[in-house]
Length: 359
Image (tube, rainbow, N blue to C red; front, side):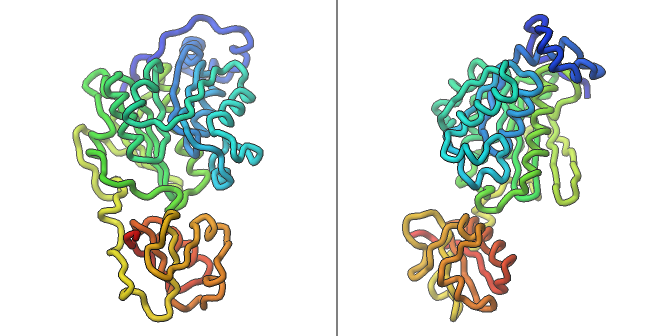
């Protein structure tokens, strides 16, 4: 399919230093100085400075994008460092926007970084997006994705979207104002806002380099949109499988319903039935890996999922025979499945993940 027109007009000739820095771009067939000048004039808002936002921000800054906005209300945690390569060990406890800004300025001092240290929601999304040419959505919640989609729709902005979970990733471009009858948005493909959040990296895990693969692909789509080069993934869903290092391209026709492996993760059809005390097998140890604030089952041993991942077991678990049953509970069965995977890998042979209502 033919390339779209450039999203950004040229801001004029670049200084000699910028041209030297971008020399490998200027050599590209079909790219050249005009495309590089458009990057320098571009204003891109990146939602999330985490696993996907890290490579997106790094590559867009290195590529020569003039202004990068970063939206994130979180601070750097030790468990982020496995995949969020924009941050280092010395940044733990620092606001992600500040850590990101420092890293990007070290990478390319000429880049203008705008920190938006706040959580994007339906109330502030439009104000945050306004003034930018392009949005790159690397967030990890449905609520934020739909808020971004609604605001971008109202402003006519294109959105480069990506997600990664476990071994799998997806990338696409949404644009309600796309020319040539190519308009398509996130809700066109994934339907209305789900009632509850699905699985996340915190519950299902994620392969660190897969974030880099997906994030770098998102950056490629952003560069193509800004400069009018190449064929962007508008009307296509790019699906990545790290297990086989393969990509599939799924054609999209709005509006459509996505089923099978492309359907969004939803606790309504994935969680196990609620657990009752009568359902606990004899001799079982019950572990509560849900959020803090009460136990799901009386007598359950409370343990954080990240502690299990680190091999920090409560005494009750450490003393529990590995061939004896372990029941792992959380409100929707999401964290419990992750915990069951960890324990099975460590030798426990009878681990049962279930959902249990909080008291």
